[in-house]
Image (cartoon, rainbow, N blue to C red; front, side, top):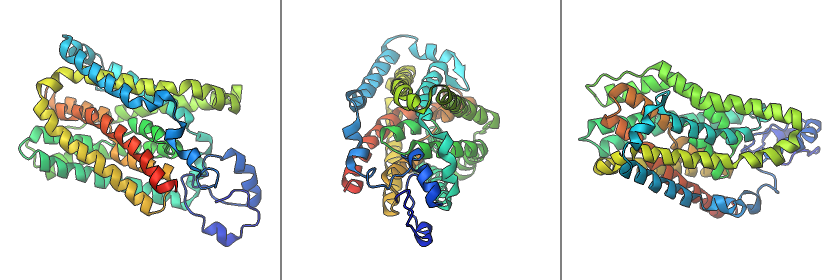
Length: 398
């Protein structure tokens, strides 16, 4: 659609196609006023649909282009430290914050803050004025809370019929919807960060309500587990409050405060470019700590890791590709499609690990399976970032 078109008829306005921005064409005068301010929400304008605009491969710096190399190095170094340096894993696990290692918690917060600072909170209300936005949210909720958990349960039984403990750990991973790293994957794939922030906020609220009953339902009732599963609502609430509430709240204060003091131009052109690299640094640091804390266990229990890793690879790949394909067939824009897909395919590993440790113990196979989750998720979803860029060139750019 084109903003500021004073000759548009009311019929045309009623048939506005849904795009990543979901802006309502309310009046020609208002459109002219909002045209400049809402630039970026309009993914359907001719200028923004040019491949040069959305093609991530052409816009990435050399540091971002080599992200796969940095992550592989972080994983290798982490495993080497965890296996060959005595006491690395126990030392990292000593300090716990909401059931997660303090270094990992710090890495996650550093990783999320720069991305959330890019979200245009002052314009998010525009999304909620369009009825079609509710359809987008419903589609996301359907994939996140019905299809994805059910698919994970099916894969857990298909790949691990004789390993009840590992199967239960996988189910915990499947029920925990992502509220952290999905922001990074969406940003790297050139998705819609504003829309992603809205989905993350909605999933966070639902996670507090739904995680415990869904985990108990799939483990106790569907899987007929004989173990007592206790999932604390307080633990889930604390996890959401820490890993979303802290970076969300601080980014809102940062954005409104700095823009008011220094101006929007300084914030967008000076501050954000300085802050952005910290997101990748936080991601690499988190990966290094994750693999270092579990390096010894991964090597010593490599068969269990491989058995858990196989269904996880299938899960991440199928859920992402299915969501991506459906979004494409429904005519969604690339930013919206890739955001929906990564939201559906990502999982809240910090919450799954915390619940597994609290319910079964840190040395349990359930805890091992939940820990393997992020170890598989990182390389697979990074590969899907590059796959999404490739698909963009083939499907949307033309």
